Structures are given as structure tokens and as C-alpha cells.
Image 1 (spheres, rainbow, N blue to C red):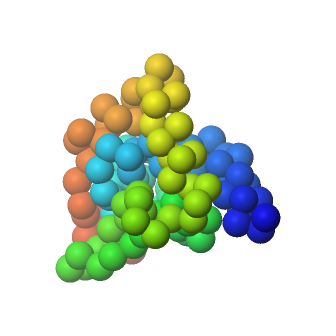
Image 2 (tube, rainbow, N blue to C red; image 1 turned 45 degrees about the vertical axis):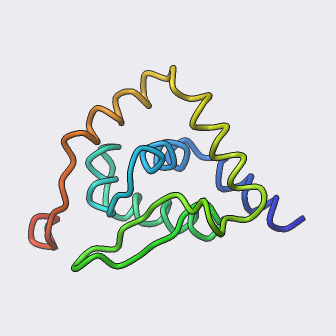
Image 3 (cartoon, rainbow, N blue to C red; image 1 turned 180 degrees about the horizontal axis):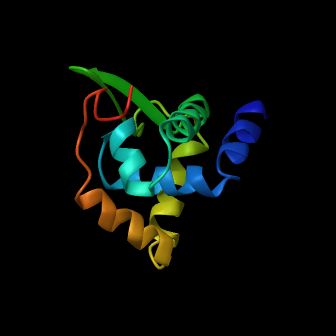
Length: 116
């Protein structure tokens, strides 16, 4: 029951739904999520952490970046069908379309480019 509650809470936020949709397109680092959604680094990181904790995402190191992707292999039993449902049901959203368009131009940036 706790897995279901955690999964549903993770999906109760528009930013997390948008992030999940971006990651259904391709794996991304925090800076690419920031660019795709036009949000701050702290907001992107916080929400990626919530999605990862809820079982939707996996993170791996790729050089200087931590790259996030939808975790189809080890996601809890609720996360996988919900992610598939989201992929199919949010395609008509204008906000999602804008996120996907910005994602096409998103690039991985180093710490100096992020203002650190």
C-alpha cells in the first residue's frame, strides 16, 4: 500500500508529470530537464529525486553528469503502468508539446554554464 501512495503522490504535481513525459522521450541530465521545462536547477533536482524515490526513474553517472531515465526494469508494480498511461494520455497537451520542442534543443552543460 505504501508503494501505491508514494507513486500517486509523485504524480500529483504538474512539474513531475512534465518531467516524466520528457524522460519518456529520452534520458536526460538535470540541465537538460531544466532547459526542456524552463525551470530552475533546484526545482528540477528536487522533482527528479521524488520521481526516483517513487520508483519511476533510475539514475546513472555519465562522465560529469547524472543521467535520469524511466526505469522500466525495476520500477515498482504501480509505476510502470502509470508511466505508460501518461505517455499515451498527455500527448495532446500544449505544455507537453512545448516541453518536447525545447527538449530537442536541450544540451548538457558544465557547472560553469549553470552558474555554479
